[in-house]
Every structure is written in C-alpha cells, then in structure tokens.
Length: 244
Image (tube, rainbow, N blue to C red):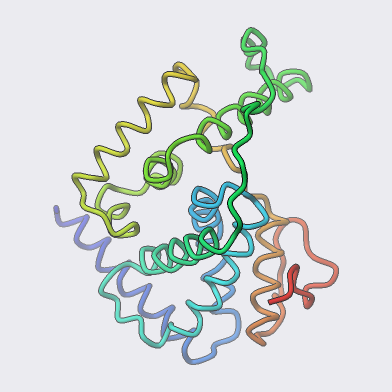
C-alpha cells in the first residue's frame, strides 16, 4: 500500500470511528447520515441474497435496527461499510431461511427481442429498450447461484475490492476471485458483452426508496424524523411499511 492509500485508509478509519461515536452519543442526524451514505450498497447486497425488492427493504431495515443497537461495540477493526455489510448479509440470510420454499419459475421471465438494442439516443423508445435490457440483466443476475451472485453484486455492481468483498461475506480472497470470474462467465453466456455501460442502473435505488427506509428506521428507533428528505419525500414517515 502506497503513502496515499495509507493516508486514505487512516482518514476513513477516523471518519468511521467519529461517526460511530456520534451515533452512540445520540447526535441528531448521525444515524440518518450513516443510512443515506450506505443505503444503496446495502440494499443491493440484501437484494442479491433475497432476489425480492420488498424483502430486501425489510431485511435492510431490520439490519439497521441491529446495527444501531450494536454500534457501541464497533471498534474500527474493519471499515464501517464492511461491518454494516456483514450485518445485512446475516440478516438477509436469516430472512431467506425463514421464508417458505417456492417452486422455481419455469418460464424464466418474458422473452426480450435483442435486435431492439441498437440505438443509444435518449428517446422514449430507446429508454424503454434500455429498461428492457436492464431487466434482462437483473433476471440473469438473479438466476446466478447464490454464492456467485453475492460476490458479483459486491465486486461488479458496487465496485468493492477483493479484500472488502471477502471480508463482507466471510470468505477467502482466493474464493472471492474464483466466484467472481465464474459469475462473469455465466453471465457472458446469456448476455454477451452487454453488461458494462448498463451496470450502474441495475437494481436501481431511487430517492423515494432511500427516504422510505431512512424514515421507517428512524421511527422504529425513536430517532427524530429526517429533517431534509431526498427525492420522493414521504408524507407519513412515522408508519413502518410492515409490522415487526
């Protein structure tokens, strides 16, 4: 690790520790700040395990509750993002174990006409085509085996490093590399070379979902309602979306 990397890691550690202390001390807005900073990544992690938007939101909220209660025990041995990811991974796995087993969909999703994806102009038609292809990618990722899908979401979609992914999932770095390569190979078989420019849009995490999760978690923890909402502010932030 060079000097710049070392300085950046030290700065991150100090920032993480300071934020954790602020949350433990009950500083207004501190936990909201943490949630907004990590919401998108953690939602994608939960969804990669559960393959369902609503279940991923529930798991994320439950994971945040556990993280808030355990924050006093955070010692900075790992990045706060890694610590949170471990909690969300465990919560999502617990949620998946609790749900009844459902039969696989033999249809495999609606067919998509691949010949429609030639233009890149932002017209209503091409935007619709882009959405179709994004859904095709999402279905392909959902169809990956669990171990490959989790690694792929963290490495390719969220851009985590090999060591961060390994630490988040509790596996070795060598295993992380192997699973990532295998996941990409499986996806290339069904999608060709169409992954790169569309990956940022996969499993979109919009402002309304972010606001909803933040508001519900704050309400359940008895924290002040978010003072400034992002896109898609809630009209009734004090009502959880699902009874605990």
